[in-house]
Image (cartoon, rainbow, N blue to C red):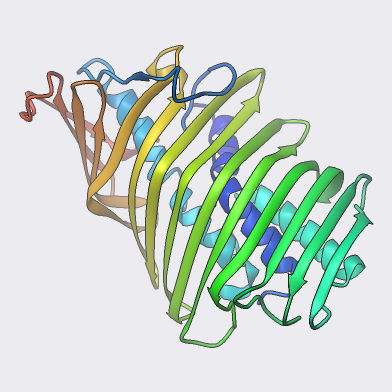
Length: 348
């Protein structure tokens, strides 16, 4: 996979938290697979993935990107997006979409008055390089989001420069804080619900789109000791770059992330539908679980991923810093008849 595709993949992955960044910052607070495909995907058109010895490594690479892609990892990127709002450390440099969202949020807060105590707002504001952002909602406290706060954003050709890159946002975001608050003191906890509607980020190099729901629960005992749970019934994202489009849908999914200093523990359970050129030209479906949660320190991973497809399965065992062992059950009888050796580097 090319470096440009990897960078775009990280942008696509973090769309699920970009909305959180946008809305949290607006209220004064303190996120895939490679290859060529076409169009979106849907549950009715995705055929069960058949796993064989021949496609075991592409399947493993595709699955691994759902949990931990290059660098800090896709799940960790979700965490970084939230932490970049002042909950913890700075956001990852890969989170271009999150940063553009935060820029919009600051614009909304400044021009639409969302920082006013007991604010009830419904206004359209001008974006820095053209287009508009409609901001509506109710916020009880101008310093941080608290339970009961609700904000809606609708971007229409909203253009801005983010790190020198021109980005255009379109679509809608909705956020409701169900409990807790995003206070800067510890211990702290919060739960928020998010809906992205035709959310689209465009640049001269790529286009990312997302639709779906997300429930995020955050708790922290210290700035370096936090836990996150992300879940939803459906979340779809797509990336178009260099004339190629790929997309992925998570259904009935749940991610958990625990951050303890330099160590991050990642887990995921999801029914997945993907358009991924490495897995064929047509959409495929499979389930992904982590029988042993992935532990990440730096770029190395340890743990297990399991992919279950059409009458077949793959178990990926990872040992830091770079070992990867693939066990293939091609006939679905529960016995792994083939074992393949590999590296984490080649799967990324």
